[in-house]
Length: 186
Image (cartoon, rainbow, N blue to C red; front, side, top):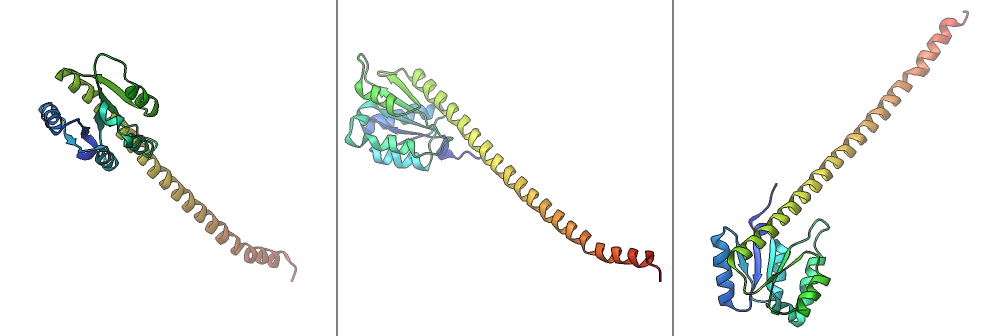
């Protein structure tokens, strides 16, 4: 299975550069590759080229261009259901998080402040889920190749049978005429 490094990474949009660096170093310590993004449009551009999961803070989804993430996720192939982990503010229900869960399919909410093992566990679970999707993608690609090969083999079989039928019909009139000449009195 060909899963690229880009497809294994987490794209992250934090509230500040310092948060992005902190998250990157924490997850890197757990062997998880993180690509920090400056804004929602750059995050979406990174998702388009390949991502294992999306890690985003709730505040980013309050921006006017938040619909861009939903559009990006909806434009993915049928096999794709990229996990979205949203770091929410603790202590109260969030309308932003509720809307994200309504508009995006594969959402996990993680309340802040978050413990490092909890964050690492949630990200690893999301990446394992994504790996299964890549396995499904590979299975679909393999199946398409097999089906194409079967169609080609079927076409070759049809061509062979058509040629065989033609070749068998060609000598039949000559044989029939020869048999009639033998049977006929001279």
